[in-house]
Length: 117
Image 1 (cartoon, rainbow, N blue to C red):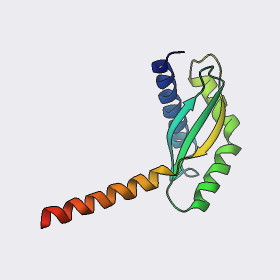
Image 2: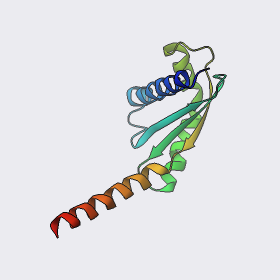
Image 3: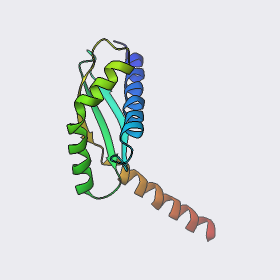
């Protein structure tokens, strides 16, 4: 499968999972963001990356919640996405998001300090 097609499938799955969490489980998934999806070339497995606002304990709690609801999410994908195989889902905590936000904050502070001097 072409890499462009895989990218489109990744983006589609990310949008669908994110939308499902917002629509069906908004109160339970506050602070959880689906940051990306990486599906295998045979479309049978996908890593779903998520980030969480808060401490490491919050990330662990979110990961357990996602695993408990994995079958429901797959069923939703089967109904909403035309794809050869509904992939098995593995949820992976994306701990880069908080670091990225921190770096952007620091760079903004440096930029403001530079402009004020």
